[in-house]
Length: 324
Image 1 (cartoon, rainbow, N blue to C red):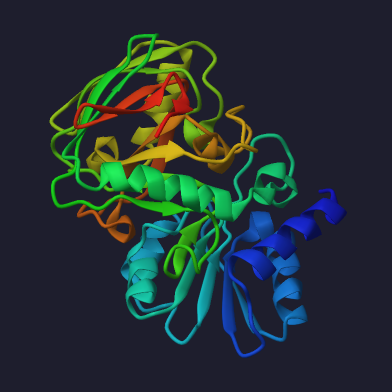
Image 2: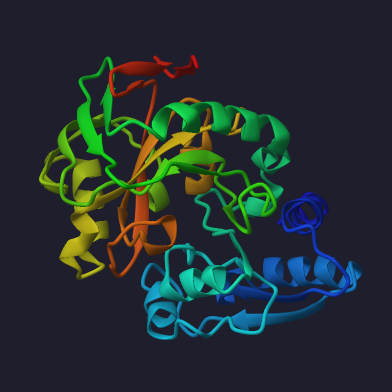
């Protein structure tokens, strides 16, 4: 780990994203893989005069969220929680309970595929004010739309539905996002869980797995993946989902548009991948804290490049360029 760059990243998280104050009581949730990064975050919080605890999760990996679903009040008593484990905790019942009770929650999943700490990545230096302005412009159009249609030149043709679901955004900054945010800079919608349908040509990132090597066809019907193309990448994705041992992990539960101009979809860091400006991603599985209804054993995302995106027929993204 490049400690100097990682410290800079930790400073951004503590000073500019959660805006830690001397009276704050902060909890950092991490795991054995990221203990060193958890300590860097703790030191930055303590520099600001915060009372800071670290919780090391008993289990690592994609099923870490199950414990936090079973213990929804585990974060009680903290002003702010930073979820800095390998996998995201943001969609868990514990996160939702903390948010509903007025605590701040920052999702900072630190999983990477290139050996670097996510705290070293340049995309953390994104201008949050500009991302907020862009997000608000998109939300004005998405909020009143009922259907989102996405196509790509590779052959993607997907429909997502959002009746009674609200478009929101993340940009890291808790104040901008009403106390609940993620390191992923994006507009997101917790879509209706049983209506997504169409054909996806996946050509960006398979989330935690990494970069797509050859474009991959995935078919959807009634909200679920019904077919994954037989290919090396397809087998990796199928095995990844099956490891959850939960059929609900095949359900599409989130639609997102990346808003970070400093991000690249290279498969090195799934948070960076889904943040890349002008990409779109589909989230699967648990979406409770996002405003959805699906309880599942985890959450992951697939990212697609250069889409055309329409909200009730109004074009908002053209070939990966946001045009609102």
